[in-house]
Length: 94
Image (cartoon, rainbow, N blue to C red; front, side):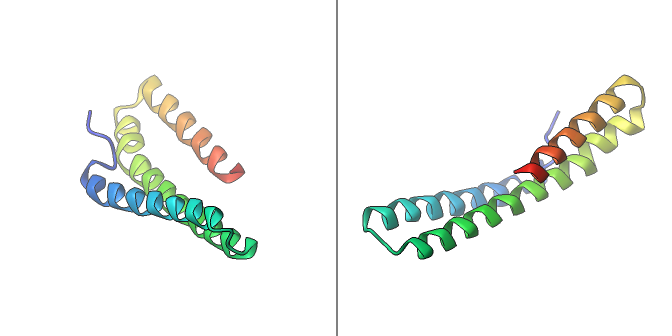
């Protein structure tokens, strides 16, 4: 089964590579003894970027995986809804 983000896979990978570059930049900032507040601002930017990717993936999951399971009905639909609810809970607590 193709993942819900399958149609946007290249875009998701580009965004994650950009975030990876931001994290490497954070490491350089620490290596170069940059000002704490500047590092914290960049950490905030990385967190926001990760949250954005997470929300996109969640939306794709709901629109494809959960919607398909619900249309099929049965135990799979209940399991997919519970799984999505748990994922939302983890995102909210993070």
